[in-house]
Image (cartoon, rainbow, N blue to C red):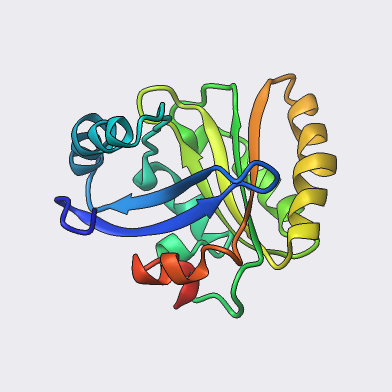
Length: 183
């Protein structure tokens, strides 16, 4: 995996409550990310005999919004290791991303208990919006994903997808893949 063209890092993910495995990958270009999800990754999933889910997000489109949320993917150095991650994706298309509601949402999100950082996500070709959040604890991540986030999407009148991941069980593997969450 580390040998793939343009690979920068990976944060391993272990699904809370279902023990699923996955990751958030960073590449130096959309072209290299596309080659990974259409070539290398499907072959790996086939070798393991499992179905796959992949998505590509446009990091350039979300840079300003993510920097404002202390995203480690844009250089913020975390003050502490995450205890959990939350992935969200909302069934909305916001193109260009900069016209979306991130300026109004960031101040509210910053008040969420235990939130360490957020990287905004904008689906390539789809404009779906979402985020990859780091929390200090699994408890705070669960409160966000189960109690707060559904109210945010209800206000947008949109369906959503969310996952909670235990960061403590994947720390060593993530460090080995140069995850920016572990400085």
